Length: 273
Image 1 (cartoon, one colour):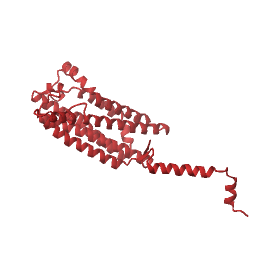
Image 2 (tube, one colour):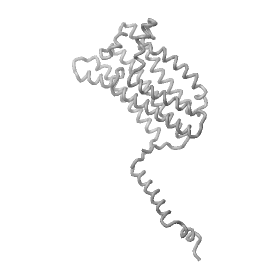
Image 3 (cartoon, one colour):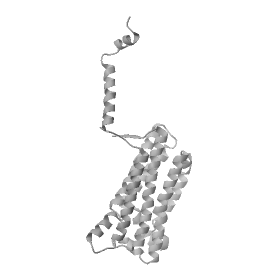
Image 4 (cartoon, helix red, strand yellow):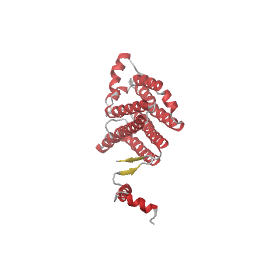
């Protein structure tokens, strides 16, 4: 008599099992070979981003001093390319990229929660839209266009000379009230990472910005903000280095929080192209 396993194999459609096995083996081979497949480790990628941020800060400090060396075109070129206080350069590109990456991760999380009919799915979706706007604002500086009208309307000076912080503070207050329950409902580890990232980012973007405004108005140099290539002084630039460093660090911490949340909810995070 033939074994039962042999009988079952006989009644299977010819070639079906081997074909399935071949497909799985070929898929694994492609994954190992890197064809359309790579793995992302949150800790490693976060460390890499932190190294990039550290390099941008170091070069930005050097560029802050080179900005006022008008003897060499090379000095001005480096300052323009890497100065953290200027727009449309390498640091701005990095900030735009990491903000948009966070928006994409939030969109992925939102999509999964929509499939699961999670009650917080709209909050994740809203966060994604917020980060899309932040990335656009980082590249196009929408917020700076509100400064002069508000400044003239309310005769602002001192810490509020860069008047965009006032509507930003109102929006932040409304956002905090709307997302309070959502934040408290997050896993404790994720909540701590998100809150830490927000405190560092907002502290740099608004808190240090107000310190910079107070310094510039006290020295009588605030008007030079409208012509940033002219420069104010090294102290102003170094305050800007602190501001931009906090913003970038907050973005990277939030990136890690998103990746860590995905791993916490769904296991190891793997991206496939």
